[in-house]
Image: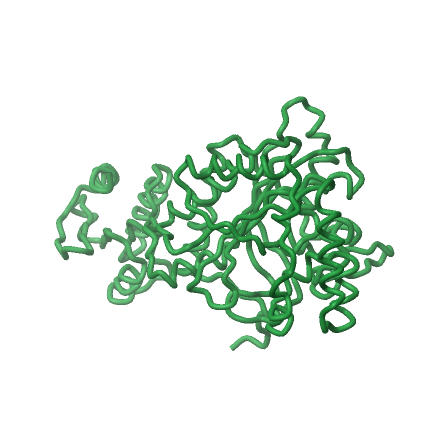
Length: 420
């Protein structure tokens, strides 16, 4: 037993379960790659101020959950709690928006960190795949991202998820709603911290998960009743486009995201089989974020889908992913000459794209065959001195149990043919 354990609220991805995480990442990324999104990777830590400005100083993420530290050189850095601010910062730094091809469409995959109370589906270290479309204000772009996320989930076999949709308005209509909401909140019995939050960003109070707060929010003014004509028309077009694509969604007038930068379109993917941590992903439009972090006006939209929670959702539905076999052929050499011959054959098979493994450590036949069984290989090649003297190896079908002699020089072609 090791002296050390993974830090509280984190997890290790270990085979065979790790294969499901890789499959989920690939499934989410596949429709993005087919839709003009290029891959971007950013550092695991950034300047604290990037998240304070972008995510919002009043959010729980910044005030309570961010892992912040000071370097030996005096820089204030933070482990990234989300991906959008980092991706936009990188795009601005590289001047991608000046290359004349807007929107800049990017996707990413990585680990993120928040100091939260660990529970099922909520970790201090978690994995996401995200997508951002930077530099264009177009309802079709919002619809595209929602459709691509829906496509990714359905390609995995996930069915029991719901898409919640809302509009948060823009700089024209949201200030009027903000004042109405603040006036309502001031009349409630809220603690000092919540009242302070209401003065900074009252929409954040609507996202408060505490039952006593939610009970008091009954009758709170709804943003949809304050939307300007432009925001109403924009939101209606998003709804029409995703409906025409066959994507089912639910209008949720109370939906707000936990980040300050969202405007207009906001959405969330939820799965009712996950208990209190029902959100598996979400996103929306963030037209003012670029200016918040010192860039030009670049209306943008994006989302992030949780890999961990998607895996949990698949398990809740009993969906078994069709994962490729990690090993198709397992070689068992008996003797030094067989080790040299079969190792060469395994190397040749790998070059042809066949997943092949080898019995290392000089095990006897019984122990080596146990390893072959554990590997899940469809075929096992066994060879000893007598076999090689006759110019053959023994090929065993691990499903049927049938075994036959195949020429040493023909074994690679035979396996390639059988495995298709």
